[in-house]
Image 1 (cartoon, rainbow, N blue to C red):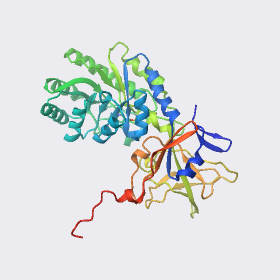
Image 2: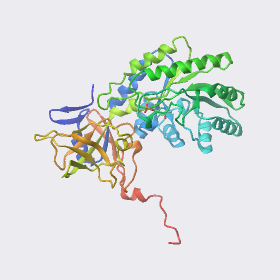
Image 3: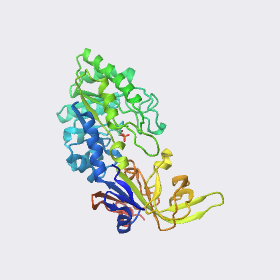
Length: 417
Ligand SMILES: *Cc1c(COP(=O)(O)O)cnc(C)c1O
């Protein structure tokens, strides 16, 4: 069931009219559906059924503490890519032993925090990083559980900016070099080799690339077994796509079947790191039309949300469906939906038919729950948006709109000025 639906002419999130939330809290505004978030977690959990698995929700897609808490309550682990995300996850009640830590540039402080917290495993992305983790574990008198992130050289058939598993990408250790890296890791005294990891990209809309990566990694796991290295975890990363327009990506069920088939005869715990698929369609961004402007060659619908609030259209040329929160009679307008920021890349949609709108109307930018607020910034000194969670007829702010005071917090005027 879709929890963002029109009742008559008005868009609802669950049982609350979106316009009611926007009128109360202002715009731009992110609205998340509790029921959708819950359903997405359960869909992944159920899809893997009896296969041993840990769902490590990928924090970077949406790092709000309330969303982390909701997933924590359902038993989720977390995939983190920084000390900050690790800190947030622990604060939200995610057990440390369900946290996987990836990223090519882990610092010494971050490594120490992760070792001292007792995380599930580091997903190690280079030989030097492996040495660094070993050195820190030794210094701290602990053993660091590690998995090596393999770059399987698989084309995820997605936007090049969100593809991560090809030779030219900075992520992971090349398939050809990984066996040697495992031998080295196994010989280190303060690391414990527990898994294999890959993450080939994001917004992947077919199962083929996942299966291809799985097969490559399964062969590696057998080779490791021959060397006497028995890994417990196979971390299949995230990357499952969602429907923004007409993509029709596989459902978690089909994805799980394809993955489990490859490892049917292989006793191993699957670690999943879904991000976008968990939160993307669970959130919308609401913005207000400020002005309609007729240019000489096209129309502009100028709204109060900019690329600082939702940057995906600007940097990935991403498509988000935009619809009026309250449908009205009249001629539909076609034009560019643009924000107030002083950049030509500040657009939410180009040459789009938006329905009949006038200034003062609210628009819903659909599927904005993933990489929306999380990638927002204060560019042009714009306070970041408010975030709200809806559950049934109730809604609560989960992040207050920033104030002008927030903008200058931490700044200091030097005494020599
Ligand atoms: C970003 C990321 C994910 C989540 O990717 P989605 O496409 O949002 O599912 C998972 N694992 C790692 C290592 C990542 O960097």
